Image (cartoon, rainbow, N blue to C red):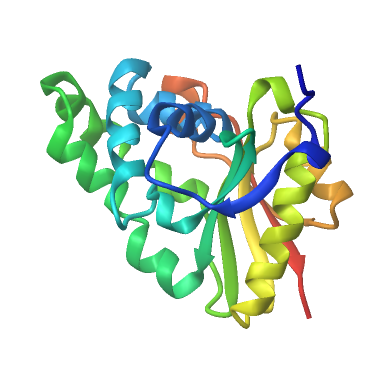
Length: 211
């Protein structure tokens, strides 16, 4: 069996396929926030996010993602876009939750939806925003995240962006990975209500200057 690592994966534009795998990768990047939004209903999260991955637009769509492929299968994803597109697409996930959510989810959303955005500072007009970067559990620590992130730097520069921004939970081990890759901590934000109700930790805005 071939070991999954940076040498055995290729990067390609993501396809509308393997939607459940993609949804699980997305969940791993921000489980605290998703557990808060979905009130820890993982099955509903998986259903909605899988559907969003298949769409031809929206913040969770494959069209904004680069895939790391091992033997033609998803081993990781990096999903991001320039600020103008980020601003246009970011609210689509919440709209889909309203469209496809269970009655329980629809009752829960108003209690947290107004608080979660405070975790995420504004993205400058000349920046590229990395929304999700994740490697398959069997492939972590083997250089795939680094390969995807370097590709993100190149995509951001090609789009004319001066910096790359992302947000990550302060307790996520990925913070150290991003620092090793040259990103700096810009701000750390806590939202007391969702910290108390769903144990959402502070989130760190990290920035890589590209010019």
